[in-house]
Length: 156
Image (tube, rainbow, N blue to C red; front, side, top):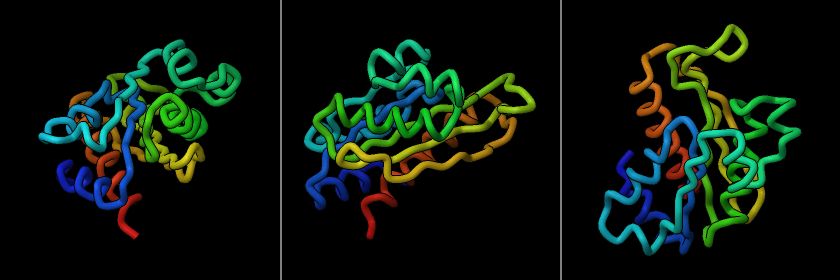
């Protein structure tokens, strides 16, 4: 997915974008801002690697974190809604996952949860199992998937 195409689609729709990232550490925001002129549609990116950052910066509920864990669609949805609440944007993508190494039988390496939110409402979420590809490969796959989700949200 070409980030410049995402930015152009946002321009066409008159939308501004924001990101809330955990395991990707800002890779989606970096990909979007690699294109000149990104600032006309990209407002900001939140890198909330720790649970405390998710709570403080995005308003993720500690109860949600305790009940479902950081790597969950519930947390991803709250991250996306929180990004919209704290940015001048109309569309947000959120990513939280286990890039590795490590994981557990319950939440294995390569599990990444995504969410999209628009106008303050979580529209959609999903969990993707990328597998134990290695940390760099999982992070890159998650970045690319998030970019594709943004584009899909703008194409009717």
